[in-house]
Length: 610
Image 1 (cartoon, rainbow, N blue to C red):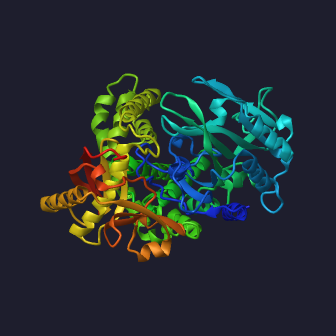
Image 2 (cartoon, rainbow, N blue to C red; image 1 turned 90 degrees about the horizontal axis):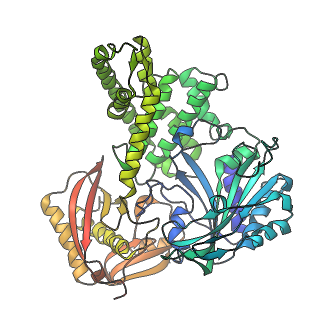
Image 3 (spheres, one colour; image 1 turned 180 degrees about the vertical axis):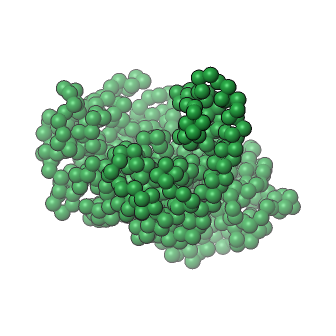
C-alpha cells in the first residue's frame, strides 16, 4: 500500500460513515503559544472539542501535516520522523465508544480497506483509578466493544493513566481514557511481561481513539460531561510500513525516491553501511520537513528564535550529514524538488511556494557554509593553547562553545582535533549541551501562562484585536498587507503580516488610533456560517491561503451593511469591541524577508459577559 492509497482509503471510509472531510490546517498553530508547530491532528480541532460548534457538523475527518522535534536525535532509526502525517476522525457529541471502536475495527479488518487479520490486532484500554477524589472506572465498556468485534480477551490489555489517558490539554478541560490499537509483527516476545507498549518492537501502535468523557475543573476534579467527544489519530507513514511488512518507515514509497536522490548526490549505496544509512535517512527526513515548513502558507524562514530556529537547525543538520557522506556545496533543493512533486496533489501549497522553498534552502546552506568557515577560523586561533594540554584533549566546554556560538558540529571538531593529534572530551560536551537544554527549558517554562487552545477572557480579547489590527493595517498600508501568523499569550499579542518595508512612526500611530477608535465605538461582533464562495463574495478575508472548508464561520465587526472587519475564522471573539480595552503597539520590526511583526498589548475593557 502507498501513502496516497492509505490517505484516500481512510478519508473515503469515514465519508461513507457520514463524516465530512475538512481541510488540514497550517503547520504553524494560530494563537497557540505553547507549541511552535502543529504536533498532532487534533490540535486545530481543540476549540470544537472544547464545545464550540464546527461549521461542518458533528462528524469530521481529515489528514493533517505535523512536526515534532522532541526526538530529533532519534531520527535515522526505523520509526522516528520530524515531519509526519496524521489521519483523524472526530465525533463532536455524535457518537462515542461503541461506534468509534466499530468503525476502527471495520476499517482495519475489512478486505475493502486494510484487511488486517484480527489475530494480528492487540488493543489497550484504561485500567481505571481514583484521581483527585474522583473514581474513574476501569473501561470495561471499551473492552466489551472490542470483544463484540471478535478481539479475544487475551488480546485486550488494561493499562494505567501513563499509557491510556489523554488530556486535558491545559490545566483544565476535556479529557478521558483512550484505546490504542497495536499490530503484532510476529516476532517472539522479549520476556514474560512483553505486551503492547513494550519497546522491543513486537507491538507497533497504529491508531489511538480518545474518549473525551470528562472535564477536569480548576479544583482538580474530573466531572463526567454530557457532550462526549471522540478524537482519533493514525500515523500515515508508520501504518503504511506496518501494512507492507517493512522494517522501517524509510522503506515506504514516499521515501524511496528521496533516498535514491541522496544516493546519486553522495555516491553511497543505501543498505551497504549502517552509518551511511542513518545519515541518508536523516537527510531524507530533514529535507522533507524543511520543504513542508518553507512551503507552509505562513512562510516561516530560518531565524535565530522560534519556529525559524527549528527550521534552521533541521536544514543545518541535514547539511552536516550531507558533509559526512561527502556531499559538497548546496544540495537540498534536489531532494526538495522530488518532495514537492510527490506531495503536490495532497498539499498544493508546496507547488505554489516551490521557488521560495528552493531559494531559502540555498540561502541557509550558504549561511551555514560561512558559519563553518568562521568556526574553523576560531578553532585555529584556539589551537596553540589547546595543544599545551599534555593529554591533548579539547575540553567539552570549548567544543560546546564552538557548537553554540559558531554552529560548529561536534563531529567536525573531532575531525579537526584528530588532524592535529588531539581528541575531544565528548562526554564533557554532552554535559554542557544537557545543561544548556535544561536552562532553555527553565527559561521557556514560565514564558506562557496560556494553554493549548486557551480560551481565557484576556486571550479572547486579544484574538478579536488581531482582526481590528489587520483591518487597520490594510487601511493605512494598502492591500499588500496579509496576515502571516499570530501568537497570543495572556500578556501580549504578536502579529506577523506581509509588507516590504518598516512602518514609519506616523503609520504606527495611525494604526493604533484606528484600532482604539473601533474599540471606543463599541461595535458589535457577530458570527454566521456561510458557504465558502458566499463568504468570499461578501468581502470576508480568508487568512493564510489555507484550503478552507465548504462551510465556514465568518466573524463581522460592525454593522452588517457598514462593517469594519469581516474574516473567516474559528474564534473565539468578544461580543462587542468595548470589551477589548485600550490597544497599544509596543514594537514594529522585521520578522523575515517581506514579513513585518507587531507586538501589542491591551489594558482594561469590559468583562465578556457585560
